[in-house]
View 1: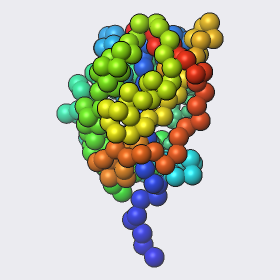
View 2: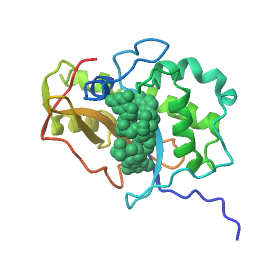
View 3: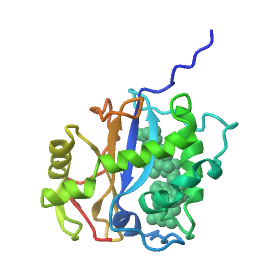
View 4: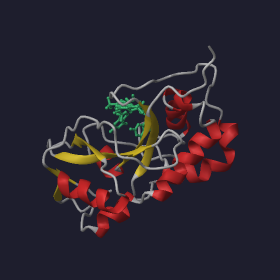
Length: 208
Ligand code: 5GP
Ligand code: 5GP
Ligand code: 5GP
């Protein structure tokens, strides 16, 4: 039988704190367009299953085609900056995200709508504003994971997932925040499953 039903249960909308990406042994490289704003940046919109597994690289016949998203590039540069080395213009990061993750939700979002929808989610969820409103600032201080989770739950109505990495002194720090979104990428939802937390109970929020 022919089926066009999507083959996943929800999306993770993942944002990264650039201060924590850069504050590691591997360091980072600013994009060719210059140092990004001191704000959370988009990592990706990832189809996921309720059991924690996820599909990837679903359609080799749908390569990244930047000509389809020309109108979005200035906003992508600002909101979805690349910090990997060597410095790039972002296209390698966006190509990776489309081909690994975006091709797995193609029955719902074509390439333009995949990127445009992700940019709109970023507008909808101002993580830095939410945290600042709760007195949680990127000042190099340590905050409890529960206070971070609670601030975002109070502001959005849904509990986020928190991922940490470690700095050169082995301090656990706030690296990525996962927000769950329904399969139409329209509404935030309670997460069916969370990424395994590698965080200490109190984590650093480094400046950028
Ligand atoms: P890491 O091994 O750094 O946690 O993840 C590497 C990459 O695997 C991520 O950037 C993402 O592309 C993918 N990935 C890791 N965890 C998950 C997950 O829980 N769901 C999905 N959909 N992708 C993930
Ligand atoms: P994922 O972890 O989504 O599979 O992989 C992210 C890929 O994009 C990695 O190959 C990484 O080198 C590349 N990349 C480019 N810029 C960035 C960035 O700013 N953050 C992250 N996490 N990965 C980036
Ligand atoms: P991707 O390969 O698959 O290159 O990245 C693998 C892992 O290394 C991802 O977690 C990505 O975020 C990280 N990574 C890749 N390049 C860099 C970099 O230049 N700086 C830092 N800090 N992490 C990187």
